[in-house]
Amino acid sequence: MKHFFFLTISTLLFLSCNKDEQVNNNNPYLPNYPVNLQIDMNFPAYNDLNFVSNPVYINVAGAGVRGIIVMKVGEGLYNAFDAACPNQALSNCSTMTINGINAVCPCDEKQYSLFNGLASGAQYPMKQYRTSLNGSVISITN
Image (cartoon, rainbow, N blue to C red):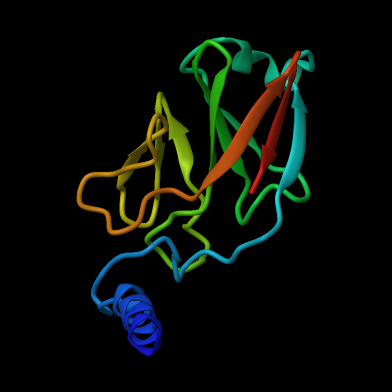
């Protein structure tokens, strides 16, 4: 029993080790603000979300760090990403803009796909939020 306990503890310690140079999901540039939004696509401002590849920027209270970019990616499927540049400290140039199906960071001109949140050569992906659809209402949470 003593050996089993020692082996279990040793295994847990070994698996919990992490090298400092490894990228993990904790982005040091973006704080974790609570997000709990409901977006009704019947409202004219969000009507574009009824169609695939028509992203919408949402900047209301509780919409992440720098607002949220939402895009329909398939039937009943939506992606929601924070509009803050994921590889820049918060500054006057760190709010991304929409360019077609990409989000562009004005600080470094990196283009992030709104299908997966990735940019070529970027250390961190865009911060993604959970989405669910109920009728015409998209719920966005973290």
